[in-house]
Image (cartoon, rainbow, N blue to C red; front, side, top):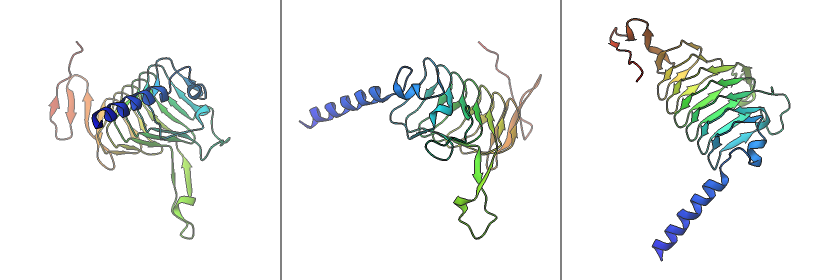
Length: 215
């Protein structure tokens, strides 16, 4: 009996998983500003807030328990029409959270590990008489260039401008500009390796890893 019950529960969960997935043609997908062909959001999502300002490109895979949020609350009208833009062929790992208020843009083929956090707004702290959570900070647009990889549990802070084909190490905290074809790690994140044309991938200690030719 226990064996049968276990099989029934898992079969039911697989059915719910498939039925709850957000794909083109579902009512949830139609509420987005754009939801590209071949894209999907796993079930269950964590939070999907003000999806009319969220645009998802084609063939993008978004894991379960992901938060895609625009603005400060349901029905917030003070948000841009394209506050959160996710390109084509992206992958967002489970429990990733992206909270946009003015502009967050992910280029094409950006892959994120699990538990990544991206935001374009923070908080202040200068007024000692008010709770920190009530001291809203400025909105600073964030961009992650095409082909980049954002490692597990990385944090991308307001104003970050990450170039193309960048590796952000797991757990890194990124603020400011990150040049194309570089590897960053740490808190705060710093460049630990970069591509030097004609030489290879040069580390901070001067070691060089060769450039691999495409097959």
